[in-house]
Structures are given as C-alpha cells and as structure tokens.
Image 1 (spheres, helix red, strand yellow):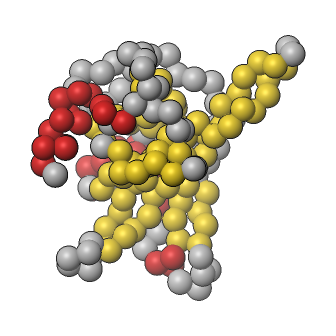
Image 2: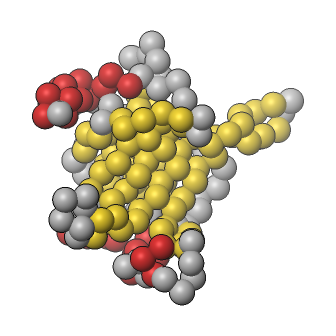
Image 3: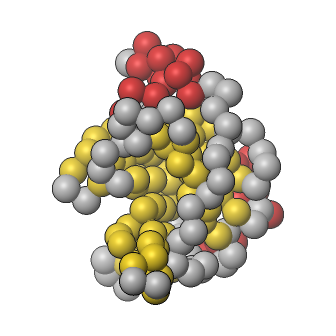
Length: 170
C-alpha cells in the first residue's frame, strides 16, 4: 500500500494546474444529514457543474466535481476524524492520482479509491493545519488528467461558507 502512495506522489509531483474550467455557479457548502437529530450523520458538500456552449447558449453538461467533508470512524481505533471525499468524472487517468490545493498553497496528492457509475473517488484525511487553511481560504482547486492526456484539468470550488458549515459537523 505504501508503494501505491509513493507511485501516486511521484507521478503527480510537480504537476502544474492548467486554466480552470468554468463551472455553473459558485455554490456555498451545503449541510445534509441522514437523521437531523443525530449530528454524526451529517456531512457538508459542494457540487460543481460543467457548462458548455450549445447553440450559442451555456448549457450544463454534467457534474465535473463533487466535494464532501464528513467525520468517519477509524476502523481500528473507532476514533472519528474529518475526511474530504473528492469525486471526479469517469474517464480520468487513474495512474497518477489527483491533486488538490487551497488557494496558491502546496499541492496535495491523493490516490483514487474506486470508480463507480457516479465517477471516480479519492479521499483525504483533514488535519488541523489543512482545516485552518480551508477556513481561511477562498478557493479549493482539484487537478486531474483525462485518460490519454498530459494536460491537467483544474476545477475550482469555492470555500465560501466552509467555516460555518464545517463548524456544524461532529
């Protein structure tokens, strides 16, 4: 498993983000709960929609990025900790993993976990330093490559409302 993380880190090291795609609209983070009476069932999320010009008008094509932050229990210790799940579209090149960064900060490599009909997923534990950066930041940028492409696709997500939404999680 350590080799997988090392390979992902090597393949994504030094990737520079290309121009960000234009997404539908800047959305704040939204809180949803499975059971409104149990805070531990809540998560915050944001979805970015890709628009394309069709017949002279901008039309939504589909989801380009999904971000979810939630607390999950460690399988061995049962201690709950915050994680960010990143969902990218199908057709990404899985070999290099993906990267993300807050504003102009350091790129963080994340390996893919799985692909389903909904897209390809990656997950990353959020430590106190990264949470602080996200609370102070304006933009979270996720970078990934389409299969067969050397160009990195960069998608920006707003961090507007992240602090308040994250504070509501347990």
